[in-house]
Image 1 (tube, rainbow, N blue to C red):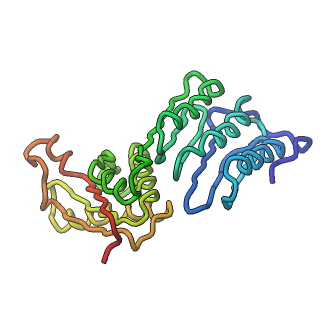
Image 2: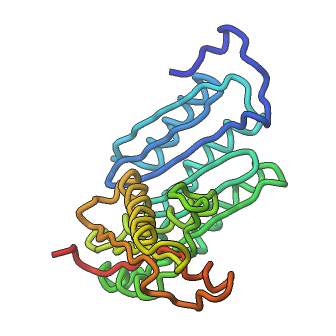
Image 3: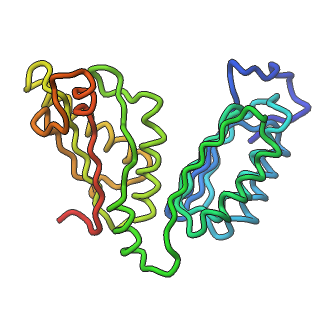
Length: 264
């Protein structure tokens, strides 16, 4: 439940402790989590969900903030209204960014709906909208096969010599999650690679651990472990020379391939 507006005073909103709001929809479940400013705000969100996502099971994790940016309530409510055209959306809203990933039949329509947020969010806010188009007149399996062929999610970067993701990895991982969730009759192959520096036994272990870290994140986001094939190749399959720093950076990678059908 949200904090009653007549209750104790709360600290003023501070950019050092930013409000956040996340939305995701998968397998008939719509999840809303993040900061709200009042009981009235939470009720507005529930009404928006009932209007725009009828029939979906709804899970909420509201965290009352009390005082937030003046536009926060309107932005979060309008964001719910802008999402029905997107399949399996994953959304992050903060004062400085709106990040949206998902699959759409009509990208122009979905982008137009999201553009309504430009009138609400600060001018300085970044719009990071990454939508994958699927053709409405083709079978789901054929569409997924085409998307898998053209899959280039981008590099998944880790902290040096470890398995912790760098911030730049999350948009890439979320694109993979959105596609894997939209194409549920598919296999996700995840293979870790290193450069040739250091001991090859360690390289093998590190490459496998990083591949498992990717699989773990996908699993946390709802992708079944039974759909994933995970491997570590160490430095055995370079795509560039290990004689230069740039070449080694290319060899340190996670290869992700998707294919129709579940693993045997």
